[in-house]
Image (tube, rainbow, N blue to C red; front, side, top):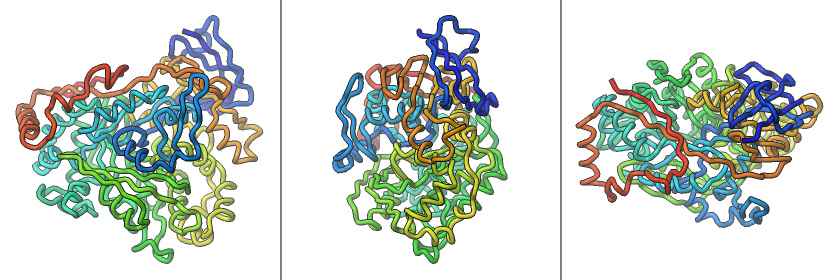
Length: 573
């Protein structure tokens, strides 16, 4: 395998405390090594460029049934940006819901090496893995959803943590899943009966369990197993004015828990797309709706066992999709656009609605501000990660634009003064106008590499240039000494990596994709003690309720996971 030596670049690696120093970066046999350990390397001259570990995306919707429905029922989404294949690349298309090929190419151009699919319905895990298989270049994992699963609801009603953990371990094995995702706990199951759970103490009909019990129980089960990633929650009442109080109630549930794992993870709860959960007021009217990001992030700053990602609104036409079925139904009545909805037997539900975040409206502008505030108020950037909840708050391709807004007060002021129609009102109802902080390149590396890798329990592989880690390196055409005067250079550079090396293979060379890499699927194999009760419950539910047999449920074999990377966890007691 080719050896590489990257010289003369400005290197940013928070794990090693390297902050813009000109340090040689070396790769040998697919791993990071000390510069003196390479003998006949290919030299990459990174003069005037920024060098970081490849990016790690903690939360995006890029594969699976709802993503594919989004592609199918939005042909207009790919009318104007389809590109013919050239060289190794095949035809790509799609804006908010890109094809699997475009997804991979976008990640490569942005210098990313790993992406976590954020919500996998277990019943459709086979479909999800087929799409992951067909997405080249990037390593991926997928989070099965548990927050409305009948097994989980029944076990946690009785506070049966060990049974819940045994079921989670079984499901991760069956679906080749990576961790525990919880979407609108109890609310989506309630939606099956035309209801919702709007607070953490509402009762799920027919199960007599509350979101508080579900969140608490899933955190406990996650730590019982010692999984690499913490419990990953999308809380109740997403997108609703005044929901910040429910968000705080949810976050405070984590106060009773501490991390129990062997992967260096220091948090027990990850609150995804925090922007959607930081609203004050009683309605969407401009006289009522307001940002409460400061109150929420101040609480997170006061504890050390919670992480989150931003979910920044990018002011685009996009396609919303979530396992929060009642929210999507509500959204479809707000904008009167087409709506897709499904119920996944015994497990979850979903909804999909196109949406336009119009910069000429107050609410869209305020949402844009709230998302950025969530990134600017954090004291420890190792616990706050940059996402757009792609495609919900904005397309995947907009990550570099979000970087620009976070790194440049000038760019934010330009938006408030010249793009957002209600800029003055947004300054009144949000905090964005009083924040002059600018995220540094060092902090950007924390929020897009080191931090996400650590919280996913993958810090021993990704997020740093430290010797022994995966040979994943991105080089960007951005000079921190001369390019700081123009925010547009940030967006261009981080959307057009000059080089991407992944696993020791050159993926992007001088801005062109030249290799499809050695893509892997990450999943967690958790070993637990035999549990006859859970085994009996699984067999019974498949016999009585499921429309498929266990043989047609399990993800196994080369067809679904051709190149697995298995992380083993031993939770036997």
